Length: 76
Image 1 (tube, rainbow, N blue to C red):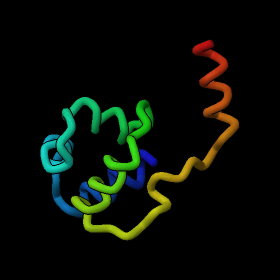
Image 2: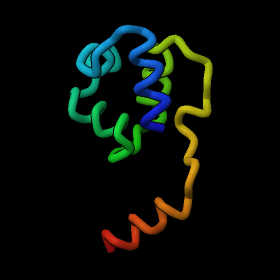
Image 3: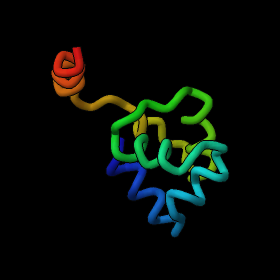
Image 4: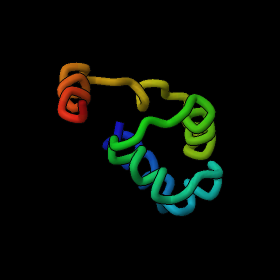
């Protein structure tokens, strides 16, 4: 997710702060979403797609379920 979001954001010549403000979330929350450290709600995903003017759904797909599972085990 993070590379695709970052790529789309840079293509639109926008900062994380600008996107966060338009989406209605704090910049640090958007940064965490872009870095893959936080999962956005469906509402936030939709707003990010609107701001980035993209129809792509794959920017929010989980590509490696095993890594996510391993991370959740580390937290437990």
